[in-house]
Image 1 (tube, one colour):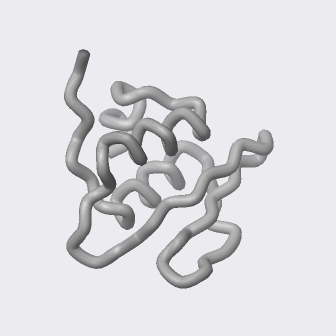
Image 2: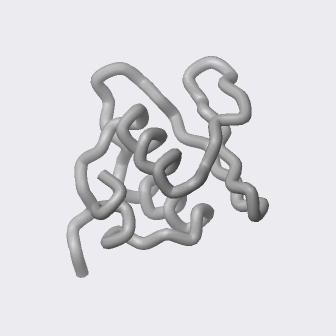
Image 3: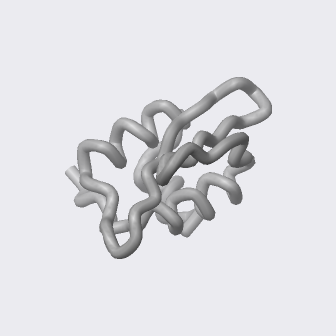
Length: 74
């Protein structure tokens, strides 16, 4: 099993934007991203905090991406 990368919310949002997702709204520190085909996820963007491995897996599952695809987008 491959180890998930330590990534901040802001960097994850940028990577998902490269994958075709668009930020549709921001409420507080939570960015809602949507893809043209209907996939949607919420990414918390907190200063100096990394996304935990469980939350990262959940976000990637909602986006239908895997860790290798994420590494390519980073």
